[in-house]
Picture (cartoon, rainbow, N blue to C red):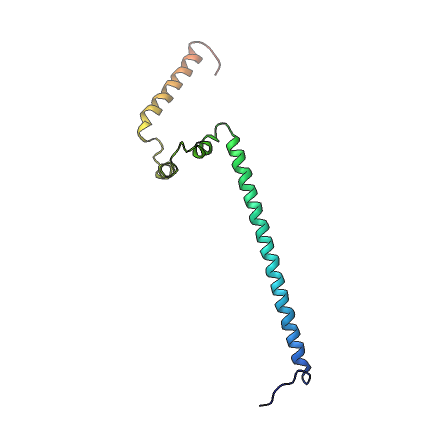
Length: 117
């Protein structure tokens, strides 16, 4: 078997150059993709922070995140309770009674006191 001299075979030079250029292009593409992923990750972080700030700023809906931040609510137990689907729990009778009272109060205001509700 004969040793190949690079000068002797110009096709080998062309192949090596092409392979080097291809490898360089692939590395450049990888660098570009990495940069884009980093930019996207930063944007997601910025959006998440702004969303949390808006949520905290809401008077009613912001109560949960504010209470979580102040450690007034046990996070694990709260989420377990929400996942179980037993939202009414033991306070069901209290909730029903409060709703009935509200309905009766509005009925009296409307029919007896002739107020518009």
